[in-house]
Length: 348
Ligand code: CP3
Image (tube, rainbow, N blue to C red):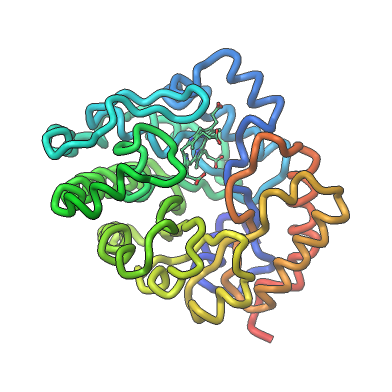
């Protein structure tokens, strides 16, 4: 099967010759070739330079043999034209943190997607470089996850400031989420116009909420995004981290597929979600520190857990960490491609 046809069919729960495999954060610091490019650019300059973003996007294609490419960028890139400074020091930094109703009202949303032309230029360059060989994924952060970085000013374990807004100033949070939803819809729409074959929305911090609150905040925005993108016909994958309690609600968002972490086996996720929604994942990225036979066994178990039915995209349950090795990531991909032909077809 042609890789683009295979990927889109897997998203649509149609039979494939084997499940496609790619890895979240497949381009990154664990790769010596990425580190070499990073010595020439700051992280944000790398995201802003289409030729460099294209170069690092291609590294895992060449070095791992994955079945899909993902645009190299970061979920925080479209926040800058909203009126904050985004930097990466020991982690992401957003300045000034957006903590008052006045600061939320001052954020720009209209026209923001037009202010990052380098992202769409990178998509066009990558497509030219791929020459139709592999599908290309675009992505964005979910409004809730983007709000967490805006309000906390960076990464935060407990999201105290965001929760303060949620419970003490719910109307202000709603306004912030609405602005971010407008930005995400326009931003993904522009990536689709530039030629991506599928998009993934990262709700990396959705799992900190209970189901009722998630539905009223993050879920509401995700349903709006899926609905707005539906006319494009491009598959929309939703990723949630730490959200086994949200699987039922997630399955009602109308997304083409759900990308899930490793906390619940795919057999159980499939039981909760039902047929007709693709599942992506879900091996613990920590496996990439293990010896190759252990990696291969984890891949075999993950494929078997989903079983022979259609609608599985093989992946990790979260991004590759900097302590992984290229050899381990390659072993993961090779095992998925070797064991894959027993899966991805009609239900047994
Ligand atoms: O998957 C890919 O290869 C595409 C590129 C990609 C990056 N970030 C590159 C990156 C994608 C899809 C992301 C998404 C992203 N960024 C998410 C959602 C997924 C998730 O992990 O939950 C989030 C929450 C972010 C925010 C972010 N960016 C953090 C928390 C960090 C620092 C921590 C870390 O892992 O480095 C980043 C920086 C970042 N984004 C790097 C890369 C390769 C490392 C930066 C460097 O080179 O120093």
